[in-house]
Image 1 (cartoon, rainbow, N blue to C red):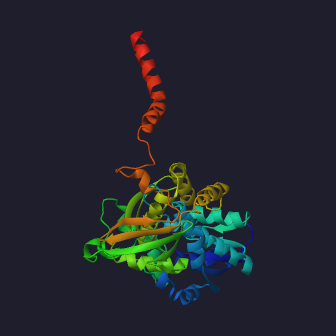
Image 2 (tube, helix red, strand yellow):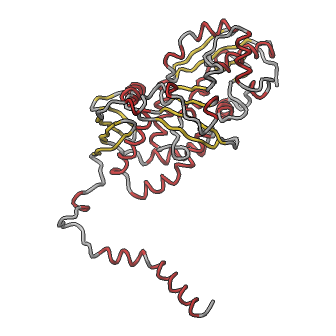
Image 3 (tube, one colour):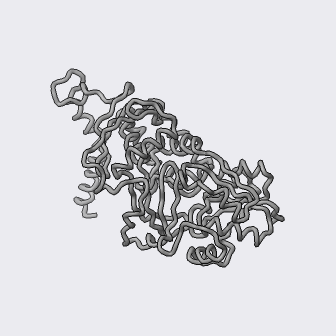
Length: 406
């Protein structure tokens, strides 16, 4: 590694990066720029500049990436119906490439020699950060303290922070890790490492306990244009405002909680608890909009590629030619995915009540059970016989082999 004089540290002000900041200064004797991305952490950004400088940062930089995050990362994933292992809406996975893109802008602006992050050597984020950094600078130098230092776990970090009088939110009583952005809030580690243990009821922030949600459901209408959500109940919103508004509307009904054991890229299984209120409804509504505007074969072929797309995003390969190739294909069928979807929120559930579009392929005159003038039901006989030809040939072969005793 070349001599390092200045490091840009992905800084959240949490336990890990607070300890990392002082550790880098002591180990490398270099200047540390505490860098923070605003991707919708809300009040978590309050007081970070003062804390970073008090901990030893030479400077503090915050970049507002909220619009870029929703428009260029969340919405493309919604258009692709991205869902990892059938449940995870990829909140953290989508934020990381957005963050590293903004971070590398600052690396160039301040003339830094290296970047640093607080991702552990067991997790996915180290891969996401470093693959993304390589995309923008193939020779980037990376400091990954969790792969270098002698601390064995977060309990050690808590003790170190106490010894240095560094204020952190984590404690022995609540040691789980929290990651928040406009799309979701995630919880990992600590008491959640036992997959049998129920998450503490007071842990959740974005969603109300479904049992305590309003006893009366709420109906809302989401408008789409070319696969992108553009309105709520007839009122147009820009991406950040739309997702923020949805989070508030949906969260109070307890919609959007997911508790899963997922397969990390490095090979181990990990338990994560997620709150994704607005994203949950957007995914449901987008599927409903596609159901009347896309052709059967378009959906079938695209759906076969969703696991591949989602896995690429999860594994940190957003800036890869294969993800971009799949995105172009998935976006290519979205031009007619426009219209309105009506949904009902009620005590943790979201139900589609209706959908309409000027581009609909749904024709009531074709599907009706009543008398019609556009469909000859007798044609179905030939359709079945042709589709069954290979089945009949296989059956005839079995009969022949049985008769010959083979």
